Length: 183
Image (spheres, rainbow, N blue to C red):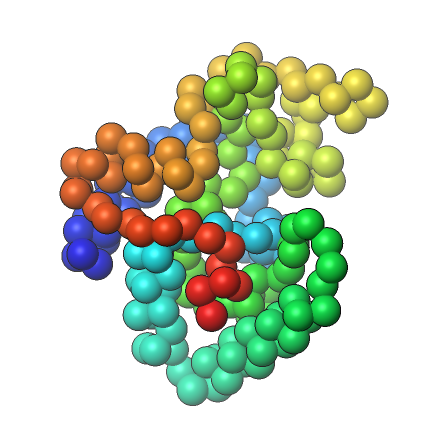
């Protein structure tokens, strides 16, 4: 199944690259920008988590130790958390870089893009509020989005991993849950 997933990712990444190129005037993502990785739930399917962990075992011992420490700290923090959504820094973020960038989940691959939601509204990335991606297309005083041609489909993990492309590769992605729940 991991081989099928890697083939899916090649085609999916190619499609994403076209979106990012089309939107390049609005995209401010650069190496070292980690806003997307600093507070999220990072939903992943069983297949994505498995693919991620397959890469984890190949990391240098020191990097694995840092990631394990991050995971243990997150698990301890989550035990004391009493809210609706537990947002956290991704445990794979080491020195402002993803230790498993090539194996990151689809949610990570789509961070930064605007898209059209099923209800017809345009969803901008959270970093628009920080003056980053699509900031010039967002009026923070009114909440109005000034973007005429967003991606025409929701970039949800469910749409991606259960959509046409996933069907083409006969992917069985399994349950989707926040990254921390896979540890």
